[in-house]
Amino acid sequence: MGFGPSNKFLLTWSRVEQEYQTDAFHGTHVSALMVYDDPRIGLIGFRVLPVNLKFKNGEKDRSDSKTEKIFKDILSAMELAINSGARVINMSLALHASETNIFSGLLSDEQDLFNKWMLEVKKFMELHKDVVFVAAAGNESKWVDDKVNLQIPCGISADNLVCVGALNSKGSLAAFSNIVLSDGVFVATSGVDIKSLSPEDMCDSSSLGSFNDEENLSLNDLGTILKLIQKECKNSTSYKVASGTSMSSPIVARTIAQLMMKYPKANGVEIIKILVDSAQKRQLGPLLLNIIPFEKPSWY
Image (cartoon, rainbow, N blue to C red; front, side):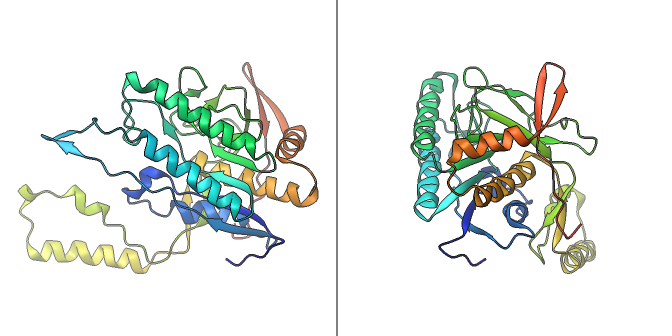
C-alpha cells in the first residue's frame, strides 16, 4: 500500500506465536482493520522475529533466556516505525511473564528481568509523546497489571498507550478477553467474528496432523486427502472471520488515526483523552468500560 509524507502511518506486527501456527492470516487480517475504507491512512509493517527454541535431552533448554532478544526486537521495531514517520503503532501481540509461556521462556526468578524490560519499553513510549501505541489486551480470560500478572505491552502504564479488550456481538466483554487493571488506558470494541482480509490461495494442511503412522493409510487414501486440501486451497477467498483482542486493537488504532487527522496539533496523550471522552460508557460490575464504536468495513 503506497504512502506519502502527508500520510498518518500505522504499524502492525503479527503475533509472535503465529509464526508456527497454521493461522498465518493474522497479519493481513489485522492490517486491513487498520486502514479499511479510508485512503488517507497509510500503512507500513514491521516484523518482530520469532525466537528459535532449543532442546536438550528432549526438554526445552532454559539456560539461554529469550527475554532480552524479544524485548530488543520489539524496541527496534518501534524505533524503526517512528523513524519512518509512524504516529500510531498497533501491537496485536502479547508477551507474558510466565514460565508456561513458550515465547518469554521465563522462570520465576527472572521476574526482575521482565520488570526491567517493561520499564525500558515504558521509557521508550513516553519519550515519543506524539505517538499513540495501541495494544491488544490478550485472550487468556484474566486480568493484566504491572505487579502480578505482567504482560507487554499491556500492563505498562504509559500515558500514550491504549490497551484494547474485545466485545462480543451483544456488546459485553468477550469471554476470552483480558481486562487491564494497570494505570494505563483500557478501552474495548468489537472482537468476535470480525470479518477482514485474508491471503488468497492459502492451503491449510493442519488436517494432516490428525492422521498417524498406525493408521496405515493407503496411497489412495492419502491422494484423496491431498485432493481435498487442494480443493479447499483453490476455493479460499480473500476474507476470513476471526475473533480476538488482536482484531479489536487495529479497529481502535484506525479510530485514533482519524482523530489525529482531525486534530493534527494534538499529541498522543491528548488524542487518547479525546478518544476516552468520546467513548460510550458501560458499567460492567465494578468496571466502567470505555466502548469504541465499530464502523463496519464496506465488505460487510
